[in-house]
Amino acid sequence: MGLHIAVPQYYTERSDNMNTIMEYLDWRGDLSFDASPFNDVDNLILAELSYLNMPKVEGKSTIEKVANRYLEINNVGEKADKRTVSNLIRRIEKLFMRVAKTNRFSNVVVSDYINKFDEVKQSQFSAMLFTISERLAYVAFRGTDDTLIGFKEDFNMSFSTQVQGQIDSVKYLKYILEKYKDKKIIVGGHSKGGNFAVYSVASLEDEQRDRIIQVYNNDGPGFAEEFINSKGYEKTVNKVKKFLPKGSVVGILMNDNEKYYVVNAKGNTGFTQHDGLNWEVLGTEFVTVKNLNDQSVFFDETLKKWLDSLDEKEKTEFVDSVYYLVKGSTSATRYTDITNNRMKSSIKILKGIADMDDEKKEVIQGIIYKLIKSGTEVRRKEERMNRIMKLIRKEAK
Picture (tube, rainbow, N blue to C red):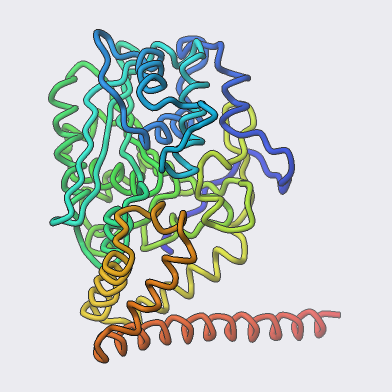
């Protein structure tokens, strides 16, 4: 991964009783942005809120008013809540209700909300603007929601120079810059939204890009080499702050040249740590550690070796085959549809593989074999290096 680690301001390996953005709201929620300027943690809060489908409200759409309307429409917090929403959305809803009660965020204005879902173009795109003050606003690009199309677009990014969501992000940011000519703009997002944030700014003309004062990539994947070598990206990279949880499995995908900070996070897996609500916070900053953990490094090296072993046709066939297999055998449109019925979904998917024609079955099996082989080779390399280091230390004695 072509990343450059930034010098962290605070180290810790503490994993129990972590303070997160929820505790941050207790510490800083009473302070206005005039009293305490916008910071990295504020960025993550707004990026997380962009996962919610924002309702329309009459008059000025402050976070307080939008949250009250959201609560009314969705019956958030009721004991008999039987909505089929993911656990992540439920947690962000709690964050939203807490944010709306703070002096810091209650009067932030939510506007220019857009939510697009295009199965034909295999794209899920959503964005919104948070106006923080008269002169400052934050563009938030939504990350991957729980739609299968959203996940497929993520996979498409691993072998496509450009996906539809990235095209939409550029159009949206240009629209915001044209509409709000008097404001300085911060652009950010979590997961795929972080990728869109960087991509959209890199695709601007120089004069437009100058109005962007900061770009936040919160554990978002990187880009194809062609894009990294573009002039727009080279002019953007110094504006970017990238944050990765210590067990990152999303933000390490693909490549980029962005400085990054490794954040201490709850959870034993990279997927749990990917959730920004599990990142550790101290004061107005994230608590950082020195390096990504061994699991994250192993995953990164294995995935890169695997992708390098596949040609473009194999990558496309594999992603398409898995997507249509899951969608066709389970009739699911959302990841939640599968996780809520794990046993039934698993049986249907296995049956779907058995019913595949021999050619498709062979493609999937061959590519999975290459993945296993890549992991084995990386592990052997690590074992060889460990043996060499032991010999060196022994000789040094």
